[in-house]
Image 1 (tube, rainbow, N blue to C red):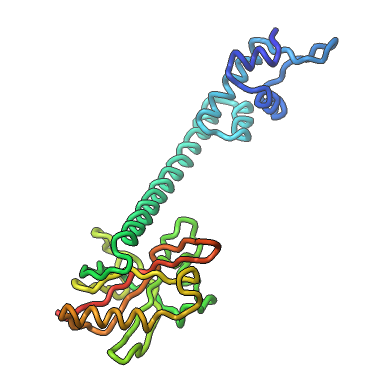
Image 2 (image 1 turned 45 degrees about the vertical axis):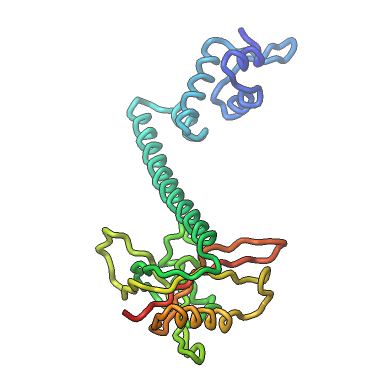
Length: 265
């Protein structure tokens, strides 16, 4: 017979874990009537090893309790198949999560490279999934939630675009659309597809940390028109703006936006 300390040392398991296994009736050591100490026999140790084995498969305690009540190997097979399906689902989620993290890293690189600088680049195709009456139409955000590729199906604004129609005198009208990026192999398009092969592109910083609560539309518009004039570009009169990343400094938000302004061909 062995003490809890000895078993823990043999198997690399803490006392707390052994007590927890006992609490869940996965192992049932005897008690010394004289001193109240637990005593583990070979069968108890095997129960601990077996529990460790299933925990290595990330099978939860409740399921291990069910395994102990199995009436045949077929019952165990069902639990293993169920666990396999769960792990495959988790792997798919992790894959999507990694893709999302890489996308945010790419956005961060855009900020470092293009903040405050103008260049010319393509606006890759996006599919319009819906429209909001205004940015602050929060009761309409369900369309974002239903159309989003957010992993947790919560509302984020990565799929929202502010579309500004303008001329040299300023903004004429604007609208807010909900979009999704189009994959090369995507054959499920249903909405309007927007794309422009040549745009003036830049990254803008907004938010209370740099601008207080000042509206920067006029300032950005003037800079855009000046860039187009200096480079000899004729603008269509539309600008697409979306949030790349929001971070904070001293408790105030720093919002980084990217803007595409299509050029006439």
